Amino acid sequence: MGRVAASPTRLSRLLKQRPRRLRRSAAIRALVRETRLAPEQLVMPLFVIEGHDREQPIPSLPGHSRLSADRALARARELAKLGMGGVILFGIPDAKDDEGRAAADPRGPVATALRAMREAGLPLVLAADVCLCEYTTHGHCGVVVDGEIDNDSTLPLLAEAAVCYAEAGADLVGPSGMMDGQVAAIREGLDEAGHQATGIVAYASKAASAFYGPFREAAGSAPAFGDRRGYQMDFANGREALREMELDAAEGADMLMVKPALTSLDLLARARARFDLPLAAYHVSGEVAMLEAAAAKGWIDRRAAALETLIAIERAGADILITYLAADAARWLQEA
Ligand code: PBG
Image (spheres, rainbow, N blue to C red):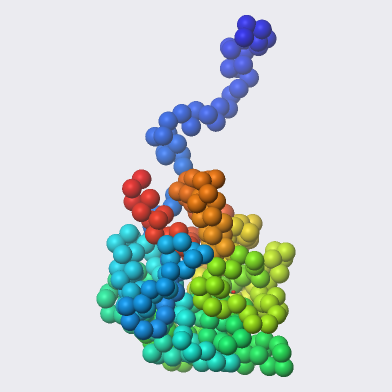
């Protein structure tokens, strides 16, 4: 101990900057905290099925279930009490066909749940995912023509589904199929049907990812042949992701989304610097599943790891976080 050469006074002179001064107490750390998460930024995905009073737990997403519209409404009421920003609905129909026609069924699960939530006047933003994969027999996000996912014949079907959800009360529709021109097609469809006020949150940069596994189990939407790399983006491409966002902004997107979140933190940061539109990140099912599995084994602290993850996504540039952890996070933030 006595052998330390430099005297404290000399060191003091050398060390003009001491970042630790701002870390000495919880109060000072809170004072200088740069990123704060609020429940209003959180959006919860909900899987809606047909029927009444039905609930089917999703094993790979602990704490989540497929819910009939009435149960989804009850869940939305609880989420509203937590001060959450909104919900995004995914529908799982009983019957599928080659063209995913049930996506635009006004009596389908999503439209039914939207109407119930709208009537209940919940203080939540109501968003609906717009894609065919949950509704097609083959599980692809578009119509299949000669073994390929056909872009242009898919567009009117997406627009029809978006109009159906807008009519049922959606504030926002979120096209997630990565078809070229889907934002423009949906905007035109909405405007023609008199839904100028319905917004589009574009899944602008969505990668073909290994982290959608639990979602596909929940939605029964795994592709029956091939994979989604012919339409979802190559996760290795950053410049292309920004180009996708540029196109969606030009086509009239009101918000941009990046997905998955954790493998795209750089894209969030770049998008934040380049676009002034609100930016959303989808913290996807597989990302949450990893956290849940490690927490269940006692390998990480669930709450601490979850909040650290969500704050990191926000710090990277996201204003809005779509996450299966939304309810827990909102509760923790209310407690804190
Ligand atoms: C539908 C869609 C998917 C997700 C959101 N919308 C699945 C997919 O693209 O295969 C994934 C969300 C998640 O994993 O939580 N196209």
